[in-house]
Length: 297
Ligand SMILES: O=C(O)CCC(=O)C(=O)O
Ligand SMILES: [Fe+2]
Image (cartoon, rainbow, N blue to C red; front, side, top):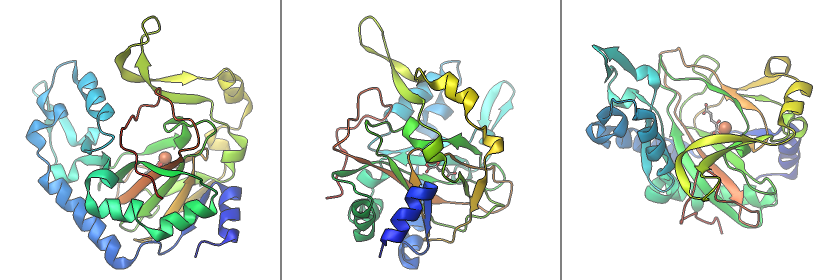
């Protein structure tokens, strides 16, 4: 049961830990499927391993921009080393991927069920007041041993922008997430004090209105002023949220959150998906465009 006290705590903190949201068996099955997907993925056809020219970043952009309804794999930069002027993969592929998505909930039956057909998820979105909840994106974040990169402080609505803002993240630990292996931490209450002042967008030609490939940030008029006026990350209080497999962390679209590098020997797999309300406007500037955004009811 998702109680009104939990909804209140979420509104207050901008995040909420719900222990045992997914059963032990389901969590195990999701972790096992994640490992199967990593094993099955063909590294030889991946753009970042095929292209070593200066175009690499753009190839990555296209691969990223086309990932909304399939299972695309994104490497950890530290899985590559420069060997005789070539970037070579120096980790086994299963240990080299930072995350994969963003359409697990569309293409994989197990992830589909846990996301789109999950009565507990429906209960949470209903309690949070969603009218037309839609599962916009999903990913497994691997946070690999030794090289799992940090996720710098950010607000999800910058990347999943609706008007009014409605994005909420569902982050489910598939393994223990601890301070050692880079669990999430939150600036509690920052969703109330730190408005969204920028957006991550697709690039368009100003004259023709045509999409020109790649992504960028655009900044709102209040961006600079608020950057100066609001407390900086280092002056905020960060709550470290350790999790057991199957625990859920709900993430408000405007709350500042981050995770540290994993320097430990243990991976930290998590499944995260984001829900928006279909009643809000989701425009074509958003990096993620999809014909196929599943409704939760
Ligand atoms: O798993 C992480 O380290 C970051 C996840 C995150 O920022 C999100 O799911 O919104
Ligand atoms: Fe996030």
